[in-house]
Length: 340
Image (cartoon, rainbow, N blue to C red; front, top):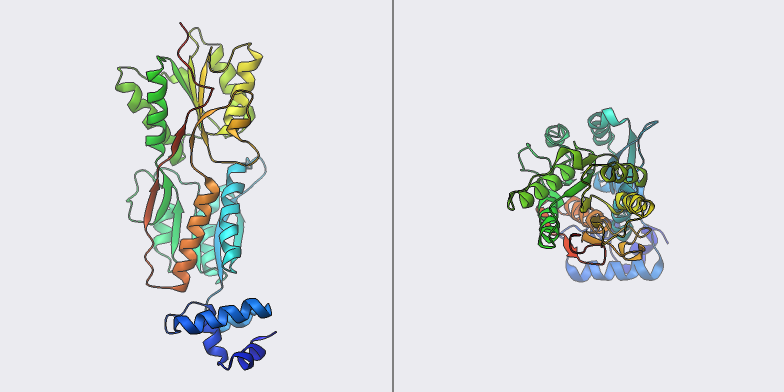
């Protein structure tokens, strides 16, 4: 089934069918439903090249993936990418992923925009005072940021979780349980989410006239080996922490390994709370001691961003909003009263 045959079957012009499939507002709802029903029944697939010529749209959203020898791959990025992909499939859109040297992400974004191969862009891995924002604002393409950038004017569309509130609430729980020596295993210190999570923790401690000792903070890539190394260092301190916050369940995997190797009991000798991005391969409830977590799904964020961008490419009047999601605090067995 091609467009000409579908046009003959429906008694509609090829232009009307194309406009119906691309969401043009001048096509009434009844006609659009009739076209969509016929497409489903016949298995018709639009010719992307012809569709691009007719509409001036590539039918694609794009993002840059930093990669280089020695650069850490990230399971979190894979989960976010899965969410973007799911939404793209639902709307018959392409997802263009452009590899880039980590030091040239702005240039890669500019080249991707200039290629004409994408209708909109996703910006991720946000840093403090992220210089990529100014460059994106200068382009003609719509974009959405996953996360935010401290120090930058927040006049851009984003989807983010309230990282500061999440770790503030997690720290308050530990304080209520009597913990006073609380450590932090965090992401790399230049990432915005890591800055906000640390600030939430510091705020909660300050309310109890406590402070976060520099000896009890670790910034690293979010891998289990880094979690292991950080926890081993904390446990060697003259006064080891009685509780620890981890910025991901991947870091927590290594931290728990260190706790077990030291012969300590999680939830009794030491408490732990991790941030859960809802990674299907690493469920906090499946740890030997189920983990207390702050929870917000990366895949859901990716899907939401793609849905909004695709809607924007189809409807120029659609406004791209700012969304700040609240993480859910889920209490399990890895948190307990501070040891006497």
